[in-house]
Image (cartoon, rainbow, N blue to C red; front, side, top):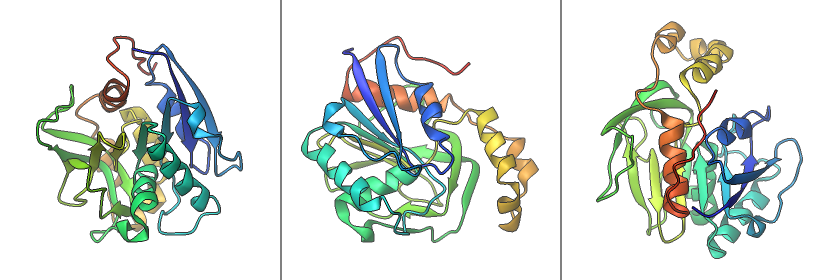
Length: 239
């Protein structure tokens, strides 16, 4: 596997996402984090081998101050054949950038939150370590409704049809759910958001008693790097 230099575009309001992503990078990977909500600005993505777009508590349906420039970054990466991975807000951002605001929207089924099953699908696409039905962390009010015509949906469930997709032509790997959270990290998040969950009629304790069914961080980050760089046996695991 070639040495890779990753640009992490962290859209979180508390600068929390980039450190979670980094834990799953291969040993031969260097990375730079730009905390966009904090005002860091966007580095030139063409100076990096891969670009990752993180989640955020912001809504993709609202006009964030950085949104126009973020969309330009996504399109610049596609034109430059720079592999991109999007998670939740980043997943929605990729589709909005390439297809316009009609490609995203609020979830028709309301808030999807907790450790929730997704069905892994796709013709001939196998993600090592992922079960046909995998339980992952969800926390979103928004969704993707349309993906590029060169893309293929790889994950779905009854709540949100497009839980993930891959586009080998445009070098995209994009997930609605959050693979970067371990069970402990996720439950910390749910405790932090307990009031929000309770206000939406969700039993917090039932979520805390649950957890992921697979090593989501290792599975999905490794798949991204292996697909768009080459196989490596030297992936980091969280302490």
